[in-house]
Length: 249
Image (cartoon, rainbow, N blue to C red):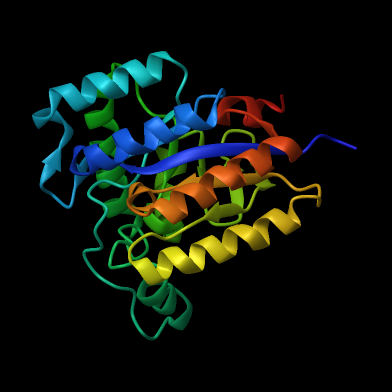
């Protein structure tokens, strides 16, 4: 039987969350993270934090990239301009319940998605000297037009809650995302309970993504739960990078 694998990522990487990201990185070091995590970068968080105005943060990103961290495009400004029509109940409910108004790509048609993807990719390339190959929509919510735009722009992969999709090979991999929410104390407590459920599922031989967010590191009990889960995953899975996973290694 094939060895189960795991991917580690930090979402919402932006200078708007710099202090939280520094805290997250110290936790990664304390936990003994050895395989570089993926960093999901927002080029201009909420339209107020363009990377170009924060050269020290860009230098930090460049250093992490040089250490092997995959830098993925994570939306453009991470804020929804509009909600899907209530006449489409599935997307409308997802926009309402799965994100705090940050489903940026859920309602975008192809042309608008392509423009935003192109602009965001260029901003990352200007700062890092290389273009991101992967895209992850905020809250993993994306329209069909977004997927079409990703293909037309030559992105290598994207993902949703359940699947990592290889656009170049035309394959999809079932790799469910394990994530927390630290937006409030009550949600953090619920996430601690969820971490225990995940631990009980780890003997099952499935690949997974452990996706953390800066707000998760606002709560000591959630940090402790995340650390325990990281070590439990480490005992049952082999950590790999996105490049290794897509290459089948």
